[in-house]
Amino acid sequence: MIVELISVGTELLLGNIVNTNAAFLSEKCAQLGLSLYYQTVVGDNPERLEETLKTALGRSDVVILGGGLGPTQDDLTKETAAKVLGKELVEDAHTRKRIQGFFDVRCVGEITDNNWKQALVPEGSMVVDNDNGTAPGIIMEEKGKIVILLPGPPNEMIPMFQKDIFPYLNKKQPEVIISEMIKICGIGESKAETMIADLIQSQTNPTIATYAKIGEVHLRLTAKADNEAAARKLMKPVIRELKVRFGGHIYTTDEQTTLEEAVVQLLKEQQLSLTTVESCTGGLFTGRLVNVQGASEVLKQGFITYSNKAKRKLIGVKKLTLKEFGAVSEKTAKEMAKGAILTTGSDVAVAITGIAGPDGGTKEKPVGLVYIAVSVKGNLRVEKYHFTGNRAKIRESAVVAALTLLRTGILETIKF
Image 1 (tube, rainbow, N blue to C red):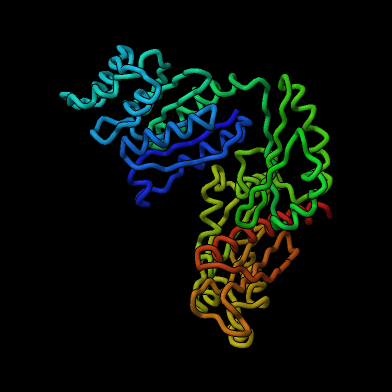
Image 2 (image 1 turned 180 degrees about the vertical axis):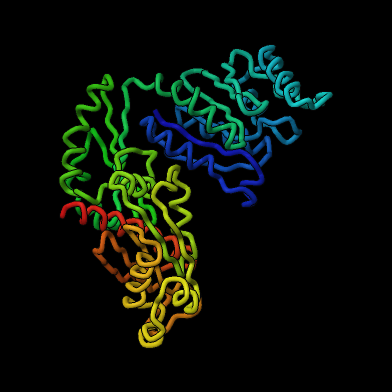
């Protein structure tokens, strides 16, 4: 089936709000095996919205509209969709009762009349309860077409889609669609794609799609079959082949697992304690680890040694080293990691020093130059990187590289 997304809201057109809903829905539609060819953003204008919806219905089987279901005068998505499909708006008693209960729980007091507008639904439509707000979702089926209306706030739309809309659309598909995500670190997108070019060129079912992240590559494998068991059987040899080709660069096949979660889990499994020392990343690396539940079991201490004085005083980097080689150097990175081990007695240390820019670079040491040192049980390794982009991207790239190098260092130590 062909699906089309229409995001409604002048604030989206003006850039006041980032359209995260479209990104979420696009990904979910891909998981469902729906063909998404068009996305449109239209302001709170009934004439333009009507024209956009008519165009979408002329070329797509499913049209999903997000936003414009609220109580105010400019919330006209439902009214416009009903007009296009020739439906009258009628009050849904169930939705009215839920709206009343929503406000009663919050002790709001008198409910303004415009809120009852949200209890009106197109006749014959399916109403989808909103567990996080007052505007229900709506599904309309007409002459082989499906129109789905979703609330705009992500904290309302996302749970509704996952709980009700995703299963509904999944049942509309003639086949079962199964997806698996394989996440890779330490290999760039170009190299990863080259390594599986033959698989991509010859793919039919299952299919492989690559997604580039900062410092990572994600591969989504999708298979269609009459049932789940048959779909997984189709994927099994391809997954096996991907594991052979990428080996230890695969850090998870769980879609929800992040790189930092995989690293923390590895530290736990090996019962290793960690100390971090950061200069150019200023705590960003440690923050990624702290975001992981249970990180306190492995993270012993973190230092932010932004100045040369801090590097000397806190972790014992030699004054002569800083003078002769500079703060951004392989020698300094080594001493940062060694100093962290000596200071805290941890099993593992990660040290990051570099030039994030936009100023401070020279011909010899340009902006984006970063040294990362990892010490695991006395095995010390230092890598030199040259990242590109703005300050934020350089720092984020350094964090991902440090996570990857830490993971590699632990795995290499385990082998011996």
